[in-house]
Length: 287
Image 1 (cartoon, rainbow, N blue to C red):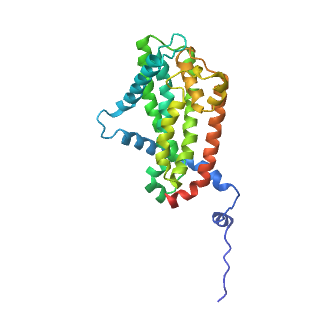
Image 2: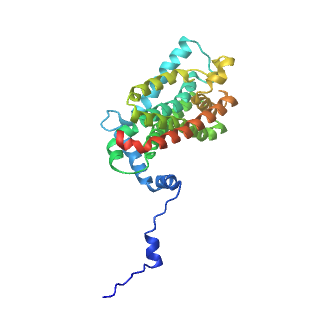
């Protein structure tokens, strides 16, 4: 019996071609971020539900914590330390305008740093771009920010201190706060997988950063010779920007502080993404 040779068609041969291309995995990774967008929505929504599940006052916790902190800081820095507020700005509004970005930053940083550990079962079993997990944690903190922003609006009505056209620039400073939290969160969550000691270090960083940032006082009281170094804290430019946008420009915004905040935030985001992508392939093995 004569042996027959089967020659595959062009369509069949192309179907089984294996393409090996340098950098193809990296390109597919960023494409997968869009493909897995529904998982991103699910994780973010789940975190919102879990955060306030079985709490006595529920979502009001997003209002109680910054409001009590504002009362304490106003008493200490205004009544005890006798620090002035710029222009005719009520001191309570000066503090609360800073609490808006700081509360978002501190919450997002804490949630993002523990996000991979909290989703260890999912990470060790299913493939998806791990970058979705810390990004979802930062987005979840944005819900608390919107709630606190409503309280800020009520306080401004109470004091009769309404914003002007500068309020339109607020989303730009919010994007800067998001970038700072996201960049630092990528570093901390990746390090937390490898070195579990970081779960104890992050609360200290947040608490220490509260006193290093101009939350309870105006950054104008910082000695002039130290202001440039002080502005290397990315939250200085963000907080000053929030105050400038919400308080009709009576709290000044230094150009060097804004530029320094943009540069430091950019470095944090780029280096955070680089380190996260570099260590991501080991997460499933060591988490």
